[in-house]
Amino acid sequence: MLEGLRRIIISGSIIYKKLKCKEPTSSELMSYMHMLSQICPFFKFAYMSANVVIGEAMENENRIHIIDFQIAQGSQWVSFIQAISRRPGGPPYIHITGVDDSQSAHARGGGLQIVGQRLAQVAESCGVPFEFHGAAISGCEVQLENLQVRHGEALAVNFPYILHHMPDESVSTTNHRDRLLRMVKSLSPKIVTLVEQESNTNTGTFFQRFCETLDYYTAMFESIDAACPRDDKQRINAEEHCVARDVVNIIACEGNDREEEHELFGKWRLRFTMAGFSPVPLSSSVSYTIRDMLKEHSPDYRVAESSGALYLGWKNRALATSSAWR
Image (cartoon, rainbow, N blue to C red; front, side):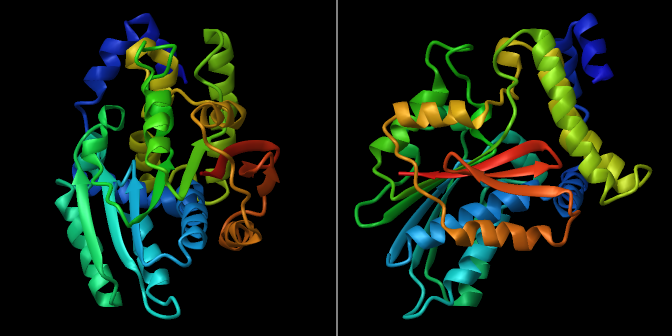
């Protein structure tokens, strides 16, 4: 937080852009991200809740197309492929389109073909017919022709902690956030999954944004305290390279330079509704899966359902929501 304030004084956006050049190697960053995912259940909350929703929606489909707008290392789909391989009557045909961004490319040490090869190997070992298509393009630049949508494939679209990166009406007249939702709706997906941080850093005054960021990340770091000592070197590296930059971006940057523009679930619900989507009630399996996963973490984590979404929280502070739409 102090670093973010310091960079405002000395021209935050310029310093933030220079900071991006000081990256760890791809293998180091991957180990830091893995460390963070082990001690903090944010990623597992996103992947596991979405996988249950998509699996249930596609229960009777023989050809499934999943568009993942933040494919990263593709880890989410390893367990999905393994689970669906055990489906009675045999596994369906799985077609995954993975949308890329530059940071993910660095984190995995190369292009999207690495993700495709890894998932193809998993699918082959499980006897699942599989195809991967990489869309090496920023999410806000995606057009229909980048997605390889085909007739006869049941479509699922996954938005894991990614929509808040899309410029909205406060930044661009194009409003990529709502444009992307309208485009996805035009594809008539069978299911759309959304996971986002439950925080409002997109509107309000600077002081409100500062207070919200301080409150949110205080809760997040308290939750990490419960899993790992503060002086652990791997934890320090994970915080510095996977979290601290987001905090600095929220505090120090404005307009197009601010990439972290979170919204509360109520605003996401409004956006989805305006784009023509209807909420899909989450089954008890989603909540059960997350509660079972959280047994490996501190009992101070909370799970609650409200307004059609599943909330993950630390003590009394909501941190993330998972919801489904069609």
